[in-house]
Length: 317
Image (cartoon, rainbow, N blue to C red):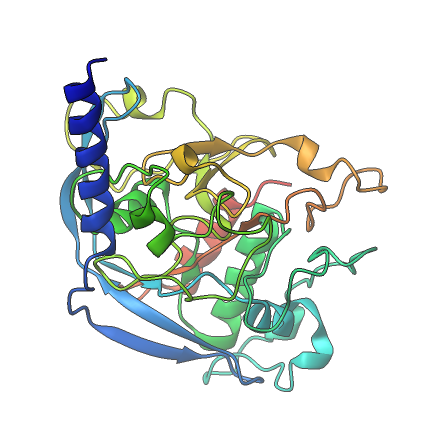
């Protein structure tokens, strides 16, 4: 590559990060409170639309159309997850106002045999080290608490929000990336408090770096190719077995090229290497303190039957 080509490539990458970190555009927001505790979620309304997904690293682009949804402004924090994880933090185990169901009937995580935060921080920091199944069961518990249908974002939804609906955001080792993300070169090898970096153009924090984020999808090596040549509407690769799932965004332990709106990471059984249980826990990955999650909420009213059918498909033991 010539000097001029390198300069142009560097400029283009820097420009893409600038677009990512520009002043957040006005988006509708709301605050959801978890009954039985002081924890709240700030949610951002994501307008539906069509975008070109992928298109970096030699992969094709595919047109994807998405419905509107709400997404968490921040990654789920320790303060929000502890209300689910440890019952004593939940002062109201009833369900949503109809009170026909008990949120306390939802299975809670088993105790950790060591502190899976490894001393990096709890209150105000991202919740980490849970399996994708644990994140989904948390969403199911939230439904019983609030009557709102929460879930993990699909790969397509996550990428759409990371891009703020626009062009792909390359992540390079640059001051611009450091403005929006905690990654290996600036994190001191630990995660940091939520929301300390600049948000993306839609007002969401830590989409890149800090904690990598579970998505809803089963990992498909040929995901983009298998979307087909037409416009894919609300795609979701449903799971057929326990491993593997797709993780997005990179983390405090990722290099700059992995902190990208298009980088895809495959979960691994090795993330449970230090789990002494046989079989391995369905709740915890002691060797992935770099993985957390973010929630989305449907803009449509879902029946209980629809919600239960969804979790039956999404959670595979």
